[in-house]
Length: 310
Image (cartoon, rainbow, N blue to C red; front, side, top):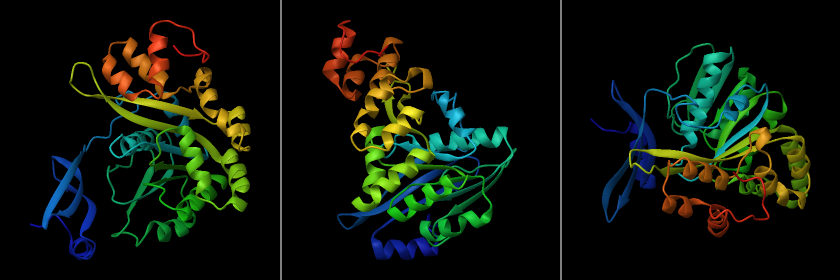
């Protein structure tokens, strides 16, 4: 039997690549990418477990539970491919599903994790089979009376527009971006728009942003698994003020480092914590920190300008 539907086969024959998900009953689901190399078909598959893990089981920061319980706003998970963005969003959606009565609509390409209704009602729509495009489904999504919207990925200005509009009109919106950290995420959102619109977008982002979680998966010291190093931005009044001004936006990384009482931390702080606990080795830590020299100085106990690490 073919892995692909007829529509997917037609798309593959035209585009020479296809991205979709399949499920094997009682085993797991798989995220599949099929492509052509040197004239033959190649395939890459990633396992998507049937069981959705909790925020705690994934060793993610507790502030994500707070993000999930917000009545409205925009929450973004960011990182490279395979860094855990979809898994993190699934854990937050499942946290809502277990705790409150909401109508949740997801738009994904493809659907990865399958949710079962618990306290919430969840409608999952897949681009290609349930709707023709992200843009098409999102244009009508607000008429479907959602409380929570999960958009698989923000790829263009139209999707960004709808995410911001939905967050601004009283919905809780989750999505992902392929950015490395919180500061780059803010810059990417602003850069979707031409210069004459950027101040308006800053105002909208300042009013709607709940938080950003950026992810990197690090191999553990014992070689038995991976742990998520995270950078957390929480939209505090100070962060909202910084978002409004292009120059003040440059201060956001420092505010993250100093924002521990709000649940914020930088990648380097997250990695330092794992290293001090013996979860990762020094080589892994040095490879993944943003500023290796500063990290080494911190390890030697030398005071640096950036207080607040620890």
